[in-house]
Image 1 (tube, rainbow, N blue to C red):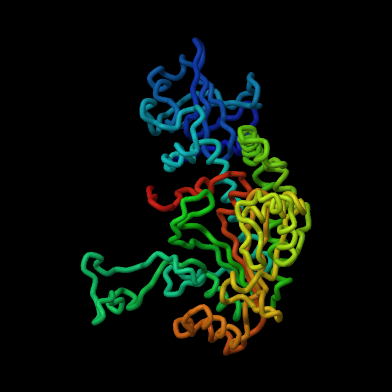
Image 2: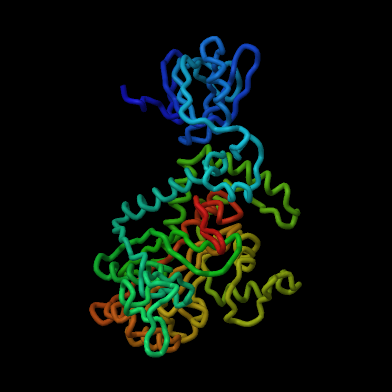
Length: 483
């Protein structure tokens, strides 16, 4: 007989009828006993709810029940009966319990009590067994599925861009090098520089910071593509907003201008957030309550005006406000927080890069809607962005959300070869190294556009988590590559 003849708890809760025989398997969340019966709360990860197992000590041996501690994995076979207690309609009366894996209660760290998020990060290999992280990672799955579904329905093609590359798409230089050279004694050239010609790829290579440039190549043949994969930044930032390894969604579209790009990004964000609202109701309700409890502990001036579910509905139900950087600059410069010197980064001169506090002010205080800012100063944006006729700005756009600030960054790409090479020369970016990228402007160039969405930033927004390290299973940050 096959071992796995079980029903998932999620389906048991949806369709179980009293009198049925069932087998369930999962991990013990808690156990309590009285003289006559033992109650076990079992969870198999299929949903946030536990299922109650009722064990009669006359049927199930004391030795088995003692081993059914928090953290242990068990198999339960029995009859579904109507529940006498509150909180569930049915429960399972155990005819047989098999211990699949024991957990020593003296050593298992995830006990049924409140644990700090920092403690759970230190135990990231086990934190998925908590309600909070089970909810987060189920939602993460649904969001990833929604991304693929959205683009598939729109006729986009999914492209796998390289993880190992010789280019730095952002021009920031904060990359992880990839090498097979002996680091204790690397080969050197006549100038005593490391000779990468003897390396595996016969040149210096690094982990990708973005799939965008390669994505553009594909879009200029397939019209509409998207990438969704891991990216890496060797940025020594120990903050709640940065990771060294994260996932990026980057659509690239031929025959799109800056406005088309904004339309797509707005529609895309509203679609995937609505998908989560419809398909993750129980997990989001739990996280909404959790966020509300967290808000109570904050100072009054730091509390959010909206709960988690309100923020999500706020984004799906409101058209995004569209303004230029210059308009945003004037609003911020003349705002009360700026005049009263409340901003940590005062707004003084046009051309200043906007910080999270400015972005959140525009969304949460001024417009009270999601905001798209376009036409940023050329000096603070990347080389590949289309230069506007004013010579000062580029056709870039950022989308700002409540509680989080920027969630999407994108632009119409510069399709004119002369303008692109001129800008690369200004920034000291090698035309020789990016010859293949420039070829797309030499052979059949066309207006095209795209944007990037950091997937973890999206998951953070949808789950209401304050730290980005809590929305990726195994965070990679400075000094931390555990698990």
